[in-house]
Amino acid sequence: MTIDECISRGILSDFLSENRRKVEKVMNLDFTFERQLELTRKEERELGREEGREEGREEGLAEGRAAIALSLLKKGKITLTEASEELGIKEEKVREMLEEKH
Image (tube, rainbow, N blue to C red):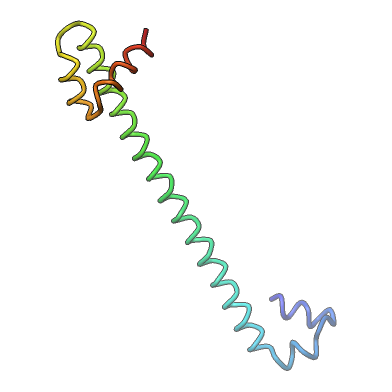
């Protein structure tokens, strides 16, 4: 339609009349390429969002485990060593975490 419109308005009419098929082919390839780029961007954004959600879940679980371990430690239900082992961090870091909570 665009080619016909240009020809009827005298816009590049000689060129478009002589090279119609080539122009259609180039336009179609360009559209296909742009559409593919758009779809690829959309897929990459969704992958990034999913990675972000997964990281958020992991961080939330780690924070929850730390809160529980610190709570149990404060109540005397577990030792500093046990809290350290449960959280997979050094005892000094557990002490720092306890100090931050006070």
